[in-house]
Amino acid sequence: MTSPATARRLWALGEPYHALTYFAEECRSAAEATGLRGFWSTYFALRAAPLGPVGAEVVTATFYNFAPAFVARRVPAVWDLATPAAALDARLAGVDAAVRRVLGEEWPGSAAAAETAALLAVAAAAVDAPGRPLAAANAGLPVPPEPHLAAWQSLTTLREHRGDGHNAALLQRGISGVGAHLLAAAAGRTAREWLVRARGWDDVAWDAAADELAARGWLAGEELTAEGAAIVAAVEADTDRLALGPWRALGDVRCDRLADLLAPVRRAVVAAGTWPDHNPIGVPDPG
Image (tube, rainbow, N blue to C red):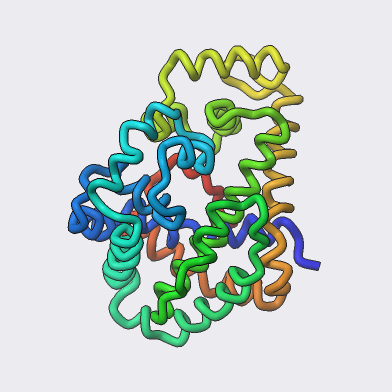
């Protein structure tokens, strides 16, 4: 039986490839060609595009951990600059160019890329959509014919499926978006400075959330209490469990093969400098 650890390992291996769309210069250039300007307008437009021209409320709700005012400064104004269809085209064009730089011109048409895409397609087809809006929106998109882009699209569907489940695990425990960031920082997975800058929360909101978590017995200063550490572990365990369905559909043997295929891809992305250290995504080392 495929274990929850498999879900975590494949997320850790695949996330840097997905995240080219956030951090690679080629992706920013492709977005700018549509009329988008600035990192965050690009981020919100490209990530939200599968949902259609939604407003700030929907983006805040589905992304979960951004400050509402931070979102509202960009959404829905981004749709005046680029339609969702244009944003979808831009993210594929940007990833295409970034992959060719990072992995070389031969990899997109290689047998390894084709095998990676085929395995990921099986997993992505097994995504359970109810209660998973970002996964469902991405699963409803056409799969590009090029293997390296098909792999990227499937990884995007799978990581949004995982993220939707993570949000459910947080919500079930009454943990807010900013509260989740405090717990992640206290657990050492990322840094407050990154999170405040990259998710839009100010010191007032951060300190109020810290007081709430301290009152619940989960924080002592900036450190997790024993109960807080247990809560963090429970959220992560539930996230892994809720992400497991697609990987069970793939099965242990094919999951292991996919891990072997993704490992050198991850190394190439990291070596190219397109996976910043201590970024706010908080992905663990795959080991």
